[in-house]
Amino acid sequence: MSSVQVECVVKSSALIGEGPVWEESEQMLLFVDIAGKKIHRWSPTTNQIQSVDTGDTVSFAVPRRSGGYVAGVGRSIVAVDWSTQAMTSLVEVDEDKPNNRLNDGKVDVIGRLLAGTMGKEQRPAEVQRRQGALFSVTSDLSVTSHLSQVDISNGMDWSLDHKTFFYIDSLSLTVDAFDYDLNTGRLGNRRMVYCMQEGEGLPDGMTVDAEGRLWVACYNGGRVINIDPATGVRLQTVSLPVMKITSCCFGGPDYSDLYVTSASLGLEQSESRQQPLAGHTFRVRGLGVKGRPSNAFSG
Ligand code: BGC
Ligand code: CA
Image 1 (cartoon, rainbow, N blue to C red):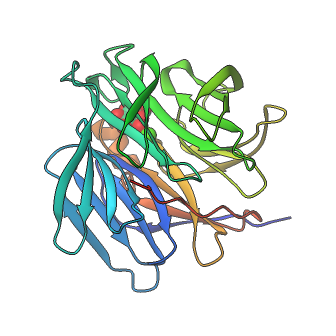
Image 2: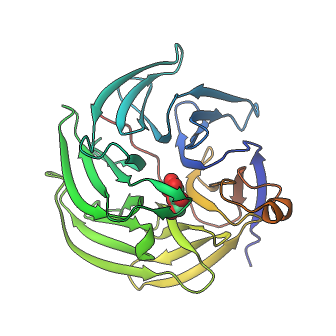
């Protein structure tokens, strides 16, 4: 029997902790607080946290090949110079929808960025429907729209052979898959991989492990679930001490630690009392599986 341990490692007190990415070169965990408008970087060796204010919602931050990061700030893809904290907008999406904002983003193995949007939230997970889209951004900063009428564009990752793109539109309550053409970025043949069960809440962020299985953050479900995309079977459930689980990624020196972010925004007062760790970041060990390195944006 493996013994799974869950530990609260970053007391980040985020409103919406999100978008964890392991940065191999720095051996640090990069993540954001969307509503708190901050990018954070945490070192497990020193336990130090460094932060940059973004001035608007920031939904993801990922390493950039030419140095620094690219982040989704409001509706802009922004270059971030960590040392000077300077931010430069590279490109904007959804210009015709001023109330939209970017949400999850991730980079494929050739350096293409995929990022989604969503309409305005009245309250967490209560959104103006079908306003969102899914875009890709290539190294020349050209933007392609792949999906429209999305409610809350959320978790994404690729299969080990990069031929399948896994994707979550949260309010559909499903994890879907597309055929993915790595050369053109084109998506096709959408199908459902998994439908959330009673108590699992909304599917949010996700990561694919080194065996090709999915780890899905369960917003309002207080857990991360492990899905075999080949069969649609849930293989494992990891329970966490907070309900609004937002995303996860593997990291650590050998990618065997699962880092999990959470939100505190939208909890009732009584719920906040019962979940004093809401908004913090957790580390899960002993899963017996490793993750894959993250990719850097080529643009
Ligand atoms: C979004 C939140 C939303 C949550 C649940 C997150 O990715 O950023 O605004 O409430 O997903 O769907
Ligand atoms: Ca998310």
